[in-house]
Amino acid sequence: MKKLLMLSALLYTGSSCLAQMVGIGTTAPSRPLTIRGQGTAPSPISQLLAFHDLTDAPRWHIDMPDLVGLNFAATNIRDHVLYLGINGRVGINNGDPSATLHVVSVNPTMTTVARFHRGEGNADLRISTPDGELILQQTPVGANLNSGSDNNLWLRAGAGNNSAEIYMLPNGNIGIGHGLTNPLAPLHVSGEARLDGGILLPAGGGVRTVLNHYESASYSGSWGFGNNTYSTGQLVRVVRTGNMVCVMLTADNTTMNATGALELVYNTTLPARFRPANTVRQPIQVQVNGTLGTGVLQIRSDGTIAIRPSISGPATLWSGSANSGFFACSIFYIVP
Image: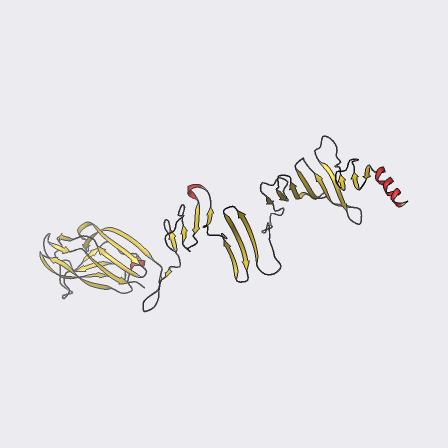
């Protein structure tokens, strides 16, 4: 009697039970349970299943919004909570997935769009291709990203000739710069590199120090004393490496008429980053009134560059007509 009542109910609601096939909305079920979609023409949506809560309020439903997908929806809240396409693509909060798995965040403030989690032990995410694997893995000692094979690991931001790229080879060499696919050293940079904190280099003895400054600068100025100018267009070059500075007087300048001058003073003072804490002095070869001698090059703490004509007589004056001056030379010192 109960079976007859059930069959009557199925037939009454438009369903059928043939042999061991059950059809809902169809008299020709092709599976043990077959559901024929319901809808109103010309809408392409075929409604299939609805799930109600204990108050009989609709909460979830399943429909086919087109001929190529299956939509799991939160009723009256959101379509495509899960979308299955016959092309093998799966969309989460996305009814038009453009990849095998296409996840879209529905909350613009949500920073995590997708998460792959394992309750215990190591966890990893693997992307496999015929050429190898890309593995993102979390282990008890940290996280790692690797190619999973003997292929290079390549990180790229941007596109075309303006892209920023980092290449890591299986031998440990890292290349930074567009197109630098075969780095020849543990760190190979194509272009300029900036290290604001400096480089800590090993030392064979003494104290290891950070190399944190390199600069090369050139100045064009004149030599004179007081209101007198004796030569113009004279080039001075300064190079600082770490806290060591080299000042170079780049050319001979021995044809000045500096009679009566206590010293030759360069009219451009060095910037603070090139100045010693105290005046530094170095003997150099000079010419005074056509005679070779030994003078003194001074770099003072205020950045002044000056040359005196005698190492032994601090009050000795320059003399000579178009036959006085100095020869090209360099001086090294340490800045604070």
